Length: 599
Image 1 (cartoon, rainbow, N blue to C red):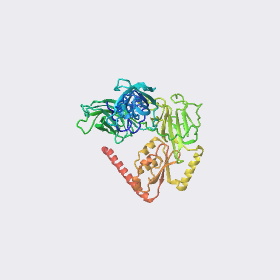
Image 2: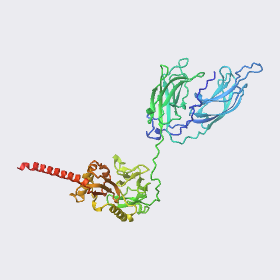
Image 3: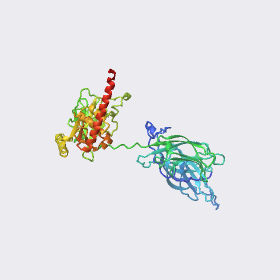
Image 4: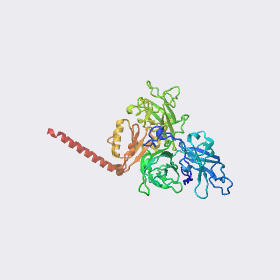
């Protein structure tokens, strides 16, 4: 038996070390979320084992070299090797000790990645300068023998070529795994199940095939064991693809292992990333190669994608100690009760633990689906601009609320915004006009409020004084939208002229010429929400009313500035007269049609 030639390419698995498996597959964690394969490799992945191999010495080896001095029985030049059985790339070897049958090596090496269940094979060889090396003996240690407590003992060698027994003293230590990469990144696991119809590359009509798996265009790889003398190998081996990045294609290469020459390629195939991202792949691939008989390989691919990063809570800096006033308030849609909001406002039922100055206490009779202390929390904070404030509501009753009950109904409890349940731990943004629902019955609308209540009257007076100093108050007409009917009429205005006419009619001045060059909308606190100008008839006819109507809601104030500019007043009067004449003609025509039957 001659010495097999080690395969080129470095340690088993390629140049890069692979992080031990440690993590369960998506299917094993439950559910078929992102990265779970269609075929479902749902077992717990077991980490590869690092082994420390010590080969101390050998006793009574066969004398494989002839003693030309005729003074003794001959000697050998022995060296020893250790590897994971059927995985030549894991081989480690000692130095050669010349001219002895009882060598002492005291060698120590490491096998980085031994799969669970694979034995360790030890071989002792005689080194020859001319010709192939001669086998002096071999022994095997089963996986269950050295795992997990290691092994230390004397092995009896087989195939020694002599009647006297030979021995090899070895030690196997199970080493702790290398520190894993803590960075969350995509991982790709491939199970190579089998190949079929391979080319016969060896004399005798067979091959010794193994499969090499890598990212296309990269050097790092992992490979299966060698299955001797077959054209239809069954591997059923799974491992992680090293250096995998999302979007990489996978390349499968089938080789015939040769002892004394370069390995022969039996076929290869590339699996596109789009075929296994993100739900995995299971199937048979056709190999391509130089020969006519290419064969197939059956594989399964699973992606283990890291969970998406948790969104950052923009209000994380707002704590329960922040009780400063916020420019918002809640108004109950049933009773009209209002509650000023603080930067941190708690919603609950308890009068004992909640502060009515800052917290919303829902103590109406029959309220039982609202938590006593922390049903929900509203956080408010000021942005970079002192006038820009934001608010966010957080729900502490997960799994309850609108749309979460049987048949899509309301599950008692929970919090919803505009009939959408608050499900995220990071809360949901709310703004003036949003309808907040706590439990089933409590419905509140969020409104703007002055930041400091004591200064509200003075602030309104200052705003009016500033406006009066700049513009003539008598040239303005104001309408505070009083009802839903008025708001409905305003929302159906398609142009500048129709909006002006509706406002003047609700102001009680339908005969006022609709000659307006400025429209301003103010919110509930009389703070300007928008101001638009159109100083010619052409600009008014081309004006997009969407920007104005977005700010119009019940409770807001619409201000119109009447213009006496003849360049605008003259065409508007002509347009008004033409409109009046067309309406009069229409009235006369319909009157004649109505009374024509009585003539």
